[in-house]
Length: 560
Image (cartoon, rainbow, N blue to C red; front, side, top):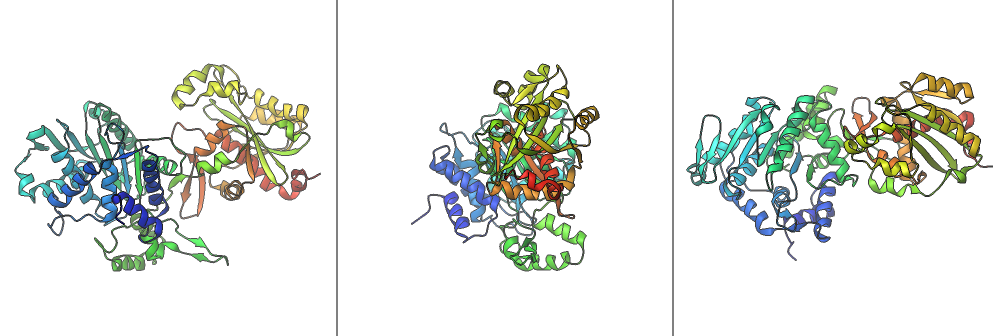
């Protein structure tokens, strides 16, 4: 029985294992196929096949050979998704395309072919197409590849005019132009397509600003596109990191984004532990490497990777380079942590009244911006941990924060999950009062309370003077053992969030930044405006629970 299209064919083959693919690739095609089945998306076979046929009939290789491109199934599937997945009005769904793939898999050639298709067959008049990179010589790499592709085909070449700074297509008054970073001068652009090549090498602030400027400029077009293709790199806190966090969050079901389309070709595991506790280095497995290199055996032979592996085994720096270039495992990479179903499934309708006279552990996270503060207690009962979290926010900041964060804080205030405290800054005496209330109203006794060292000292002093045992929790990679333990507990269904959707959101906002050298990680936000204060307060509580378990674990079980 023939497949409906290349999307269904690829999905079927990666699902069955006929074609090796990593978890993120399986995830995006499940999202696409499920969306088609539910009619959230519509498939325009004519549009998809038009793009594929153009590439295979008019686009030539530009390095080492000049024969026509023959797309592999994984490439046909990507093209089909980009151009064929549309809404009910036959408008392309996806605007941000993010392809992460290992070296030597033909990513620049693929980008050049996409440019060629949009120049010659995109119906929109007056297209502006930009090849973007930090420096002009970098931006010209894909641009030159496109021009060589045009020159190799007489029918395309005679319609294009090479000018001093661009390539012009008179029939539709369109041009393709390489540009370097200049966010201020980019404000006046009206792009139909922006190609961002090797964006893992884009530096932090400059790259972030330039990307946002170009992305916002897309709004004037009916179905524009920003196409980012990269191998993993080494620069931290860059636009690559932001897109990776957004992508993994979307693929896990934690994001409601509609326009982002990530194809993350990367290995699933650097190493795993077998049942006997032995470490198996998966990055050395050729089958695992196929997950990051879908063109293995086509554009590059298996023997190439075996040779590179032999070099990688000689030193840690060579290993790091191999993991980055051919496995797409960025050193100090950050990915979304918990899946939506895990967090949502942890919700339970419980009140403090259900835990009268129980022992607990507590945690406090005082936001450095003083906009949102979180205090939590974690209580064990019947072998299950229950978290209660109270948030605090200045009265005068609610409207502003609601607009900037995109969170309905007013609703959470009405539900009692947020205490309005102070006018422009949280009054930490209210945090102190919440813990006193737990003890005096419900008899809930926090035996240990963890706090970040940056907390307001007067609050810590007041708490200690009252009789609470306060403990400084070191943040960063020091939390690795606690987070590992906590992940197991929540995935096993033994951690519950007591009727608090705001706390759930904070859990879903967490990404883990991995340090491949130390094998440790630290929690960070999935994006700049996201909040994780509630999560941090819970982890502070879990930290003191783990630290003092021998001392007061029996009491914390609340078994009596």
